[in-house]
Length: 441
Image: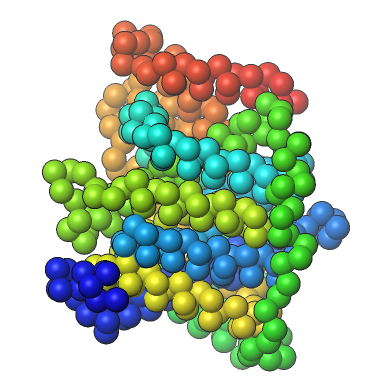
């Protein structure tokens, strides 16, 4: 095992890698509680139960897809990078595709499956670099920041801090409400933990908030700590049965969005963590193809099991900071995700006010990408800004991307920079124009 992971070459050990794997798991374990609530649309009270995904099945699919992704990344690509269903992509799946577009979750899973298969082919045939280079960096940053704002908006809604208003659309909620106060408390605690640099701050923030909620009678205590692993019969393979429903312009946009966000989120995470660990050589990442294959294969596995797109997690940087340098750390993280399967009964104490702070903090982390955009160039600032602002205001990640990708060629051409626009961007311009013409009523 030591020789396979080259412990001596990387100056590490079983102990160091195990601690790193545990650290990464704690930093991203919140996805086990957030993802089931997000994909089941638990915060949408008037949504028909018959159209919801089963929370237990999502929990199991989340843990299994994360474990599979971590194992492939650790054993095949040999990097200390963990994977799980991605934040932002789960919000797009639940709120934009299922709730906003009215697409059944089974069909949405089929879209995730197809995007993962496309990602595999793009990786195997080396097309990834061409597509990455075709999309201007500013729009990549804008998409990430826009998703951050969208997730934060959902967090504030779930907390009851922001509520609907017939006159001004949105307004400040009742801050004297017990659940809202609990969410605010959780946000303060999580912020303190993050500012203090506590590893797994988001996860521990959820735990502390849940405990306080139980102490004050806002949350019912769990009936058990461990239990049987929830069945995934309702979600397993559902994507295959709905493959025939994906041949529409609407689903094409959905698949492109899944692919686009996963594509660049993964690339950004890999580069960031690799730089931190010192893996980059001549500005290139060794075994990049294997790392991307691990990501795309995990997405396919997750779609089959019953969850939204599985992607590399930036929280892996916490494990690298703890000394992780090999794939063994990811193997440890995978084992912990598998172990978590028996703790499903504890999820009963994880309510929307408990997870709301996590959504808000993740939004803060994602919106930092705004600093990388050149706001002094108006032809860049306009499509970037419209991408960012359209996501929370239209409650749709796909719409935000569409608006930005339509305005980018327009502003660049008017600025006399048409030659800098890649042909792929013109193709996306046409696709998103069709999206508004045929799908927006």
